[in-house]
Image 1: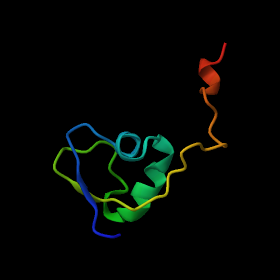
Image 2 (image 1 turned 180 degrees about the vertical axis):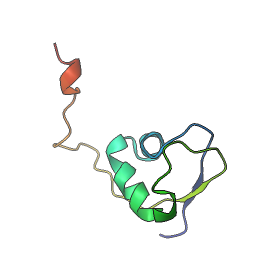
Image 3 (image 1 turned 30 degrees about the vertical axis):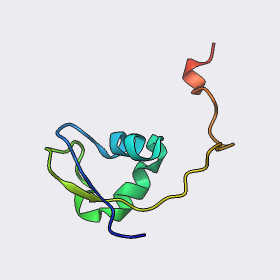
Image 4 (image 1 turned 60 degrees about the horizontal axis):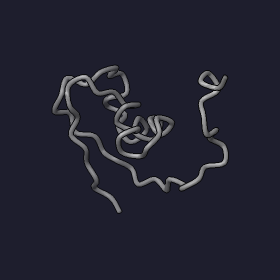
Length: 73
């Protein structure tokens, strides 16, 4: 499926959009790859339209730890 779009809000960044859309910030690189004209943007002003690639997000990604290492006691 192609043609998916996302309109950014002021203050958002590629990592926060990836977290919202895919549930994980690690997919920010996929968003960057789909939007090369905006690759130098750190924070969106608001209103930018991103091309959203279709990514198969595994339900239980075995490479991702259940808890971030810096949060483990």
